[in-house]
Amino acid sequence: MSRPPAFNEMPLPLFEGEEAVKEVSEGRLPSYIKGHRKRLRQRFLERGPASLADYELLELMLFRTFRRGDVKPLANRLMRKFGSVDRVVSAKPKALAEIDGVGPEVILDLKTVEAMARRMARSAVMDRQVLSSWNSLLDYCHTAMAHRETEQFRVRGIALEV
Image (cartoon, rainbow, N blue to C red; front, top):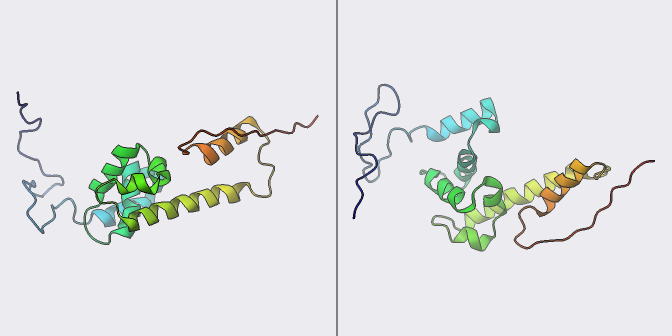
């Protein structure tokens, strides 16, 4: 038994004054992609990272790897497979390589972002009394262990001033 297509209406224009894209011809991008990278960069710079969805933030990073072309499908595949940006960035290279469109350059870029994030988190706590509260202990545990594939047991103490 076959199901009828979910969307069988004629496509509507994405922006005012444009024609609807009926189908993408080989070598020609639909009108909504034209200027997409510029608009995404501009929104990030003007409104900050909170203005972007997770897949858009991933897209922004993938622009550096792929100088041309639409990276949204790849960003969406990564998000579907791993569920969140932090899981994409912390995924094992072998798991990343299983995704269509992910090659050595994408893996290198994602692992570089992961290494930078870890160093930033570590430098934020260097030369400080890190575990001075329950919340700081939870933050430490999340940063250090949240994306490990194997369970870890760590013992930490909190010195209380009396």
